[in-house]
Image (tube, rainbow, N blue to C red; front, side, top):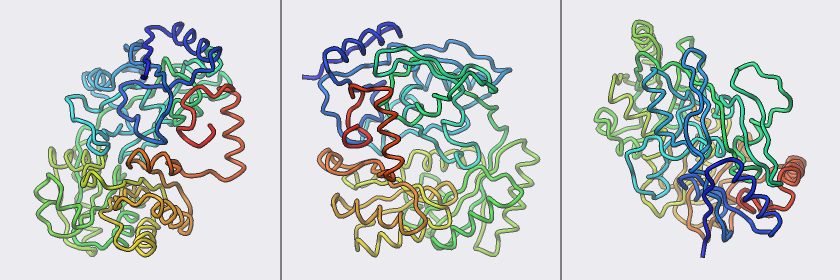
Length: 415
């Protein structure tokens, strides 16, 4: 039976980890548990629930900086930012539908610590950077039971080695985060989306590249093949009966309108163009952000591929050739650099086919986001690192968590 410990203070976190080290008792770190099914399944008997360490510590809208405890719900963060007309630039995703979890009123779900620990970013990542690019400072407790602090609440900070970047994306395997400081940005005044209809997947890579290389400051670029476009809640996309490529522009209204029209003129040679305003534009980018358009069927195995943008369509084609009939649906984001791939469940064969396709077409990362527990236990959910990087990762793990008590085996076998 799983035992859950829910500390209320950082001092209690340190005490619990010190106890776990002394008793050689592994701990699984969780917040709201919305991302607990990413990576290898946990076999630990004890959980360290950090959701009790919550609350916004300091928010200075004029300085574009927020500091909050790790267990603070992201919905609370968003409410505070909305009131000041600000936002987290990297668009935290909501993967509840993708991971088979019930929807709720919170958007985005989860905690601030869970967001930073998993380094998840939405469509604006290609223009604003990843979550780790917005983390200014962290406080936490290492796997030794030792409290630490890195960075601070200002953008320019030179207080030593940048542990903030190291902790971001570590999935709770190096330390228990207790407090974080992040940069925030003003919310755009207006958002418009240009649609190009009918492009094939390879042609869409070209269209998105042209849009991103243009002077029009595109903040999102995605492509929905015809079958995926048909699942959209946006009528102009769902009823198109063909593939749809979308480019987003944001900012002051006169600038946005001008850039929208300029993009339509410049890309008209690639197919009929259209534009989405207001709610329809927001709906499309939520669907893309949350990967909802490939969430069905629920038994499908879902991969998230980070590849060179122009190779996205070639990678998918290589998987189709290596595993005929396996590809159920595809969605391209980040200008083609992020490929969502839903495959028929056949875990062992798919792992080699997907990773071989990624390696053959410029390299990148293939992460298994959704699969059955047995498949996740057998497969390396995160892309294997080159030997030198793997050796470095093991040394970092040994430095922060020498007893191996924090999330053992979640990111890679043996660490």
